Amino acid sequence: MGNRNVSYAIRVLAAVYLFYSAYVLGKGYIAGESGIVMLLSALAFVGFGIFFAISGIRGMAAESKRAAQEAQEAEAEAKEQEEEPRAPMSIGERARMKAQLEEEEDEEENEEPPVK
Image (cartoon, rainbow, N blue to C red):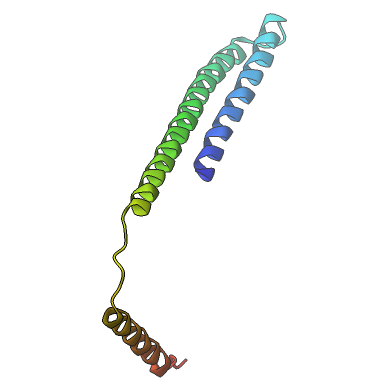
C-alpha cells in the first residue's frame, strides 16, 4: 500500500504543479509578455494536469478500497480459525511429532557447511 500510494500522491502533486505552471503561462499571455506558443503550452499543461490528478485520485481510492477488503478478509479468516475447535492430540501423536522434530534437528546439525 505504501509505494503505490506514494506514486499516486506524486501524480497529484505533479498535477498541482502543472496547473500552477499553466496559470503563470496564461497570465503571461494575457499580459502580452509571451506568444501563442506559451498559450498552447499552458493548455497542454492543463490537459496533462487533469490526467495526472484523475489517475492519482482514482488510484488512491482503488488502493484504499483494496486495503479495506484485504483487512476484512483477514478478519474473517481470523474469526474462522478461532471458531474451529482443535482436537486434542493423543500422547502417541505428540510422541511422533516430537520424534520428527528431533530427526529434523539432527539432520540440520549433520549437514556440512558449504566449502568456499
